Length: 456
Image 1 (cartoon, rainbow, N blue to C red):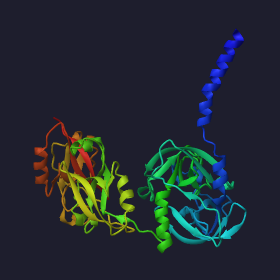
Image 2: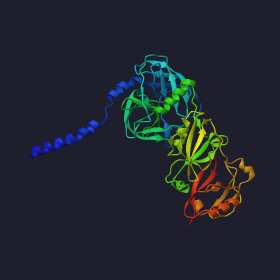
Image 3: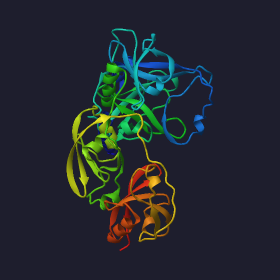
């Protein structure tokens, strides 16, 4: 009897375990099919004399996992990964893998080595297109990152620490990540938990169909090694860049001509929104596409070119992918009303002029618990706005709770522009208590909105 019961339990256990085992992916066929198109890249850089920081002593950050594995002697050969996108020798990698290289050597999976030509590179997306003089090469199959789902299994192939054709796997942790660096605003990164380390940079990220859906680019790390967060450039973005690099060797991006900030819960309440979403416009640059379209500071962009803007970081990515000169529309919330505005997208320039700092002077006390003074005429050219009052001192009260600091320039309150201290006092006296109201300020070189709630 006991043996029968034990047998039943064992049978049940095997039945329960079977679906779990069956649900785990088998990557063997995928690797066999995809690996021949993955390459190892060695880039020899120009000699440099400046000292380089100790990577292990660097603070926690998003780090390009591309390092010198052969010592600090110059010239410095360094390694990364890449993959062939066509049988005639075009291949993709990261821009930072080949940046400043005098010589680029591509090692194919069959051990052949060829010198590569740089067709073009795009630092903002961290992509580079290379070409080797070969025919009938194995090439990857290009998928769609747009159709990728969070939780989906993915696999990476690359050369971590110089170990060629190493395979790692995991799942998609998130999509549309914006990272705090010079490229993060224009690339909606795919976040995964696939183990990525120095040398994987530029390698492909595959879905279970064996199609490339991303290019491994960065990790978040304290030590320089993998800590569970990897970031890949979506292949949809990459192929748009490839098309332009092939055509003219460079990339142009759409430009709107605004500065924006995140809409938090308090700001959403102050602007009368039912939820915290959209990109809040803090500045409209003169003669920019936004200026010509009639966009105003304080507008909240909730849709651009037919794509919803849930986070402020969505806007640069959406605008940047639109071809310069294209005409499109955007939905904005202005004074509680939803407006549709037509705009002709411009071309992104390397630099946009920003505001300068301010110098505070004498006071005028008010309900906010702060002291302010008028904005001097000679300061207006140094600041982001031609109007406003300057915060001189901040005491306990609503202003301090909203994190106002001395030197801030208050340019509008509750969508009313302030030409003088008298305007400021008049607007402040009319503000209701107990509800959040939007206040536009200029701090240092950045205009922004804050929400201030006066005492009832």
